[in-house]
Image (cartoon, rainbow, N blue to C red; front, side, top):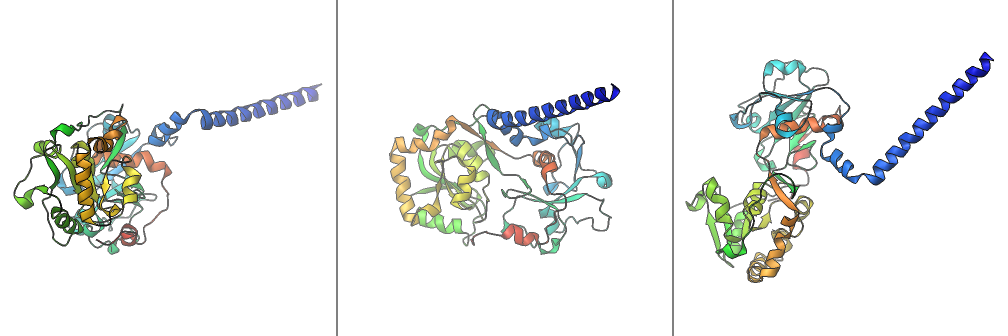
Length: 363
C-alpha cells in the first residue's frame, strides 16, 4: 500500500512539472507573439528587467575637460531611471569598481595617466571613452591590450553614446517647430574652426560659387551666442551640417541640435549616407555624396526652396518624432550599467587604433 502511495506521489509530482514546463513555454510564446510593446520596453531599458540583483560601480577616473558634475545621491536612478548603478569619481574606490572609465583627450595630451602601477582587481573592466573623430584622438597604438570596453558615438561601440537620437512624439522634450514663412536665407553655415584642407571647406567654396551661403561664427567674425544660434538657423531654408572629419558614424550636434532643432533642412557631410540613414528620420536630410557635383546640389536646393510642398515634406517626420541631444556626461556613464550584464566579460582591445580607424573613408 505504501509503495502505491509513493508511486502516485511521484506520478503527481511529474505531472505538475510537465504542466509547469508547458505553462512556461506557453508564456514565452505569448510574449513573442502578443507583446511587442513589452519587448520594445525591454530592449530600450534592459536594466529594468535585469536579474543580476547587484549594484554596478562605475568609477570615472577623471572628469572630461576637468568639468566635474555632482554625483550626490543615486544619480543614475534620480536623473535617468537606471537602477542599481553606482556612479563615483573617488579614486579610493578603485579596488571595488566594476568599470573604470578613462576619457581619451586627457590621456593623449598626457594630462592624466592610466593607473598601470596598481594591480587591477579581478574582473574589473577598463573603458576607453571619446566623442572625437579618429583624426583628433591621437596615437592609440600605445593602448595595446589595455581596454576592455569602448564608449563612443560609434554604433558598434560596446556602449554607444551618440550626440543625439530620436524620441517618440509623446516623450518629454520640446522641439522648435519650423516656420517656412520665416525664412530669409537660402543656405547658412556656422563655423569657427575653418581649415582649408577639410573636405567641408572645399565643398563650401564650390557651393558658395553656385548659391549664396550666409556664414556665421568666429571664422567670419560673426559669432552667435547660444541663445541666438537656433533662432538664426530657423531663418534659413538649409543648414550646412558639415562635420570637421569624414568618419564612420561621426554625426554630431550639427545635425541633431543646429539643423533639426533649429528648423532648417540639414545638408550633411561627414559619415556616409548609409550611416545617416541608420539613425536619422527618413527624408529629413540631404547628403552631399548623393549628387554628381556640388553645383548640381546647389541647383537642387534652389528648386526645393521654391517648391513649398516638396520642401515641407522634409519635416513630416516631426509628426512622430522629436530630437534628444545628449550633453550630460553622467547620462553617458550611467548607460554602462544598463548594458553591463550583456557585455562580454573577457574582451580586450589588442589594437584600439585599428578598431577605431576601421572603415573610415579618407577626408
